[in-house]
Length: 153
Length: 216
Image (tube, rainbow over all chains, first blue to last red; front, top):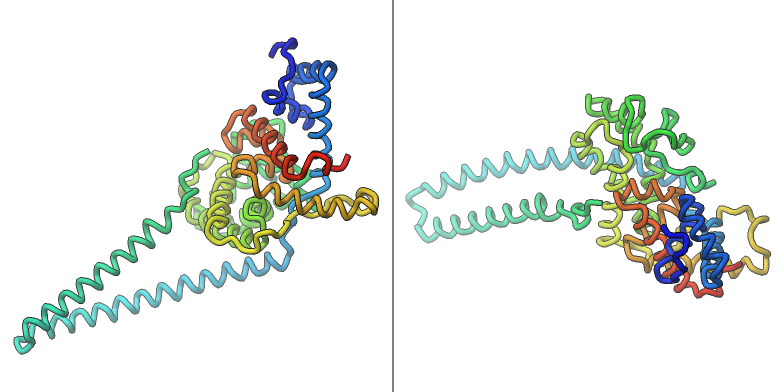
């Protein structure tokens, strides 16, 4: 950067900010020092930045209390238990549903059932199936694709 | 009290774990070495040893909480985000490319999870998660303390008005103790962008606080 470039408050604020943080290389530091020697606006802006930095230096983000981490560990184990419970319930539902399906198919095969009843059961079953697929699709594809997952930095 | 305000985050922690680890400024932070405990724990996990993952959780949970708290602004949502982030990390570790530094990968997951959490389930909006790190004796005079306390709350309100881009850089520099170069590498953005985002954040915060209200 040219050492003769004059200070522009709109353009050069980031360099002043870097200067206040001690993050500039020697060339940029010299440039800022030249502005500070020559330009009152640069000195005022730097003073404002230093005041804010001095204030934030007194602050920090809170840390989580130790009880929160104990709860965190408990939640992890509850989650494992719930995953197991859902797995067992899913297996039971599949067995139960499969049995019901076979029984239903057998009933529908009976000649004594009127055609309108068979049609009704068939349409109802198809509706349930579509609903099930829709819920599964939402669970697997939509809810898993969260907005910020795609943000690549 | 706040260890990692003064101790910068590291790309690779040493085997001690926790917050007292050493920052290896001499090496290339973009290259993870074989003696890196993160790599070792990930390998253990990938070979079926769950304690490898437990060690990662232990080493990074405080940092995950710090990132999440800065983005969501309250304890409950931050803890939820940390929980979800570690579940995602557990699920995604088999896809982690060994040899690459763990921390940037980990940071992205925590950050994205926290942003999703903030979008979906923000509770207790208005809480101020900032606290004083200064000893009471070193605070401004008692007369100024009440004013400083009000400024602390207003500063956080100002941070909450920042865009995600400005807020992230401001939090990483101001409250996580990262240097400009570390932030640039972490977010994969040029150094000049770090500088301009940080300045933009400070300028907006100042505007929000009012120029005269930042104590000299």
